[in-house]
Length: 377
Ligand code: PLP
Image 1 (spheres, rainbow, N blue to C red):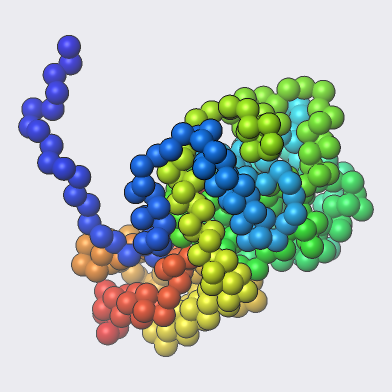
Image 2: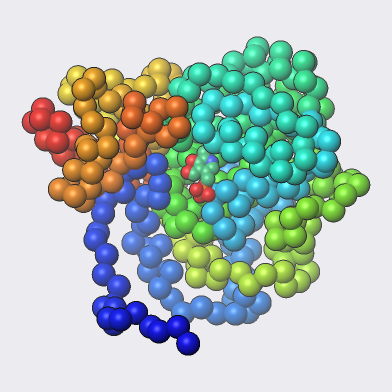
């Protein structure tokens, strides 16, 4: 037998942090309270009723009437993979707009499902114009266009007005990554004619990692139904998942029941606040952050018109050791922000104001601590 650890471990003890990085952000206390309940069976009538509530709430928060709307058991990457796995058949042409790290992840995943992947690129921090997207659709004639609405690596918000119409014109499905936008940035999935979208629990929804929104429009479902090949990922096959989430209630996998409680509470809180009020709160607090940074003489990486309210990329001033600053914020102020990712590593910090954390007190707390660490206080 392998021996147990030499010294018995004490019960779990963790620091309390204010999470103002790219995610996770702090979960709302009501969400944690829901998580702390005893599990019930994942086919218990009370749980089935909860599943129906979750679907109704999620459709509202995403502004869609798609019947095929439910959370995936897994993090945002699982829901991301679910969108591609269900509609990409070997040889399908998939066009990905890459303007940051998560565009590259879409490329990687689509190629694993044997898509004929084409890419267009924008510098990290920029977004695509409708004209650029039209030109790329004309050139590549894809079956699927995938775009990141909120690029967490750059802090840029891709405008989506008109993109869905363009995709209909070119008979192509539109996939949108809303991992850093859902719950914090206006999204109108149906109005924008988005066919597939995914998100996560741990950011704008003030929930937790491990449960992730997923939706498919009837157009996308039609593509799924017409597949010549099976979905190559059993766990993420939406036609199987729909039999559990729909009226048949056929067992697929054991649902993460406590995460579903938490998710239901998180969505309920957004409805209680009002979706538009939630978006306005995120915008107001982000603007206060940007003004405070300007007062400190610190620049933001993204042009104001494309800046995300949920995630701000802050330029690291010349001569400043970016990682040393994030470490001091964590160690001395219990405050987490993110370092730059990929091309922007060492060049920016990433400051998140998402979900319950988007609050004036947190803006103040960050600006005070940041100024102190930078020696500007
Ligand atoms: N897409 C974007 C834009 C993200 O920011 C992230 C994570 O931060 C993901 C996808 C992947 O989500 P997860 O880390 O929850 O798997």
